[in-house]
Length: 196
Image (cartoon, rainbow, N blue to C red; front, side):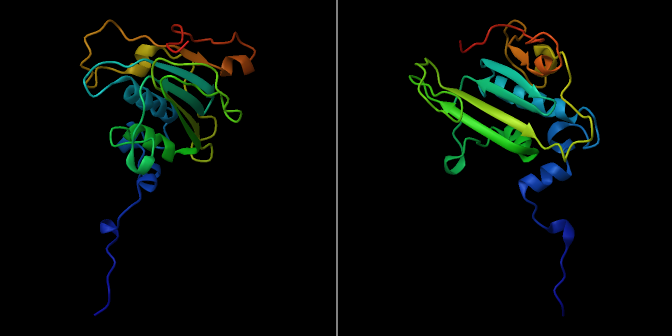
């Protein structure tokens, strides 16, 4: 009797599953032009919402059509020293669609300059985590991009389990693509950086 391989019972790596079925993680199919914006929206939702139902402080920077950075006021503490833990599935799923993901954790009381210099630049009162995502252009369709002129309420989403009883959510969104397009810098700025 020969060995039979049953394909539907085969274990699949997380990254492989995200790439094969992005709708499970981001709510839209791979061929949807909304996929890059949905990736950003899910990461923002996760950064903004704490397990106790309150909102954290975040900032968003859109660096290119398929690149963005999210800064948040809490550390990550994950498996085996990884900065991604079980409560950070959107970050991990977004990273699976990237050619490069950089996570920088700056503990309270100290700070490091941007890569590659990494020089101390002062003290901080809270721990912040900055995660930069460079989405894989070979995965996304030609011309697909994160939407322009996003507002915090668009990235916050509709309810979706948000229990915070605060006024409408505001956080800075800086779209650096505007500079490259000959438009005014920081075309979309919804407030000052919470980490200044």
